[in-house]
Length: 163
Image (cartoon, rainbow, N blue to C red):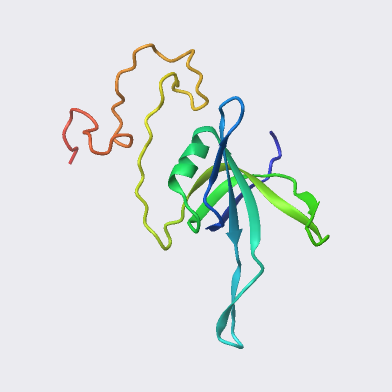
């Protein structure tokens, strides 16, 4: 959709990812990401925490399954996605509130204070070359790809190192 607001947030997961499936069998995961701004107060010579901003983030299909399999409560993440219009509601105490929601395009662990090991998932049967899974144009028998990035331990080709 045109004119969507794309944002990137960095924060910590409030809970373990909640993976569900629609009646049609499509995976969907919800996570809450909290981000607290910090500023240095020169008068007290200490860091002051601001008010935490909570964003409900939603991912679909294979991305949803990858999130549920990889991330856990407390993980520091970087999330990029399309911001939805805030929904207004009333709290149990009768206070007017609004919630921020984000449709996830990309999500991953932040490597600022941690390390990660990446494992590429193999495509499932029936998936074509297109990321949207259009298998009409995919060949019936596909030869294994010679791709150094997809198979880092395998040689990329028959030729030797160019230097």
